Length: 264
Image (cartoon, rainbow, N blue to C red; front, side):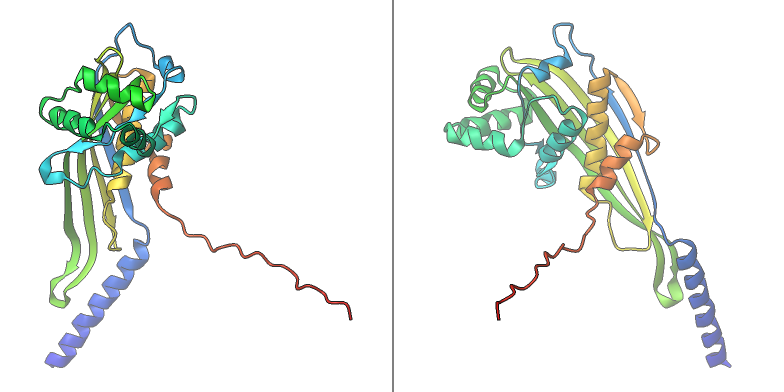
């Protein structure tokens, strides 16, 4: 009798799992970004970035989050180039290369250490470093907070079967634009993003995905001169920034050549 009951319970569990898998083949994926940005001073116009180059400085972060900031400035450069292709962008990789070639790595490190404490880029150091890079403006990123959680939504405890899990991430980024010639903080923005993925797979919410949509929202504020905004997947352009980050493997195209024909 117990064996029949156990078999029946297992059958029901498998049936429920089958129905759930069939009905939830695709993931439920959503995000929301809230931004708060400063107005631009009358002396500055975003058109200036079409005349004067702007460099992407590597992002900084708290000691507890160290390592997570790597690559953020690279994403920023890609997004800025996509939104405003007319701007003269110096990528993070090219900027640090030029700094090192000019023997300014130590001064750059000291400036960043001071910035970490004061949130101010020293004018004299900034001017020398920007001159070495060949830019007038610099974008400085800061990863202020990052949390990632996972919660089981559908589970059959008796069989230790997890049917669905909600994975979510919250990130807080700040972005500043500095005029290296005057030492002026031209513009600043703070954004907080919540991104969730309810799925059957083991994929987390990747930092690149949430970073891209957050940075895209901040640059959208900059371009449109907004001081506060809320963005969701309804904004197709920003949502596409996430979709583009997902790698899609394509079979390699093989070049087919005919064998040489030898004269008989």
